[in-house]
Amino acid sequence: HTSVVRSVAGDEKELYSASDDCMLIVWDAASGKMLRNINCFAPIRAMRVSFLKSLIVTGHSDRTVRLYKAGSEGTANASHTFRGHEGCILSLELCRDSQILISTDESGAAIMWDLES
Image: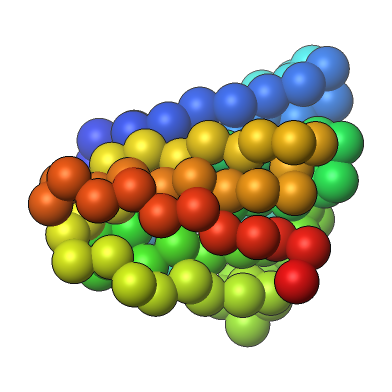
C-alpha cells in the first residue's frame, strides 16, 4: 500500500488489507505474497469479509459501500454499490449470517442493508 491501511481481515488461506490508496489487496496467508488487488477508485475507510458467503464489503470516503465476490479483480466485478450516506463511511458490520449489512458514516447515520434482496 502507498497510504494508510484502514482495515484488515483474514482466514487460514487469505489475508485482506484495505487502504486510503483505494486498493483492496488479497495476500496468501502462508507465504505473505500478494495474490491480487482490486482498485476501488475511492479511499477505503472500512472493510468486512464474510468467509461464509465469500463476500467482501468496502466502505469509502465517497460515501459509497461496495459489495464484491471474493476472488474478483478490478472494479468491474463489484456486484453492487450502495448509496445513501451523507458522510464518509466509518464502519461496517455483517449480521445474521451475512444477510444484513450495517454501515455508519461521519454524519452520525447508520443504515441497514438487506443483502438477500
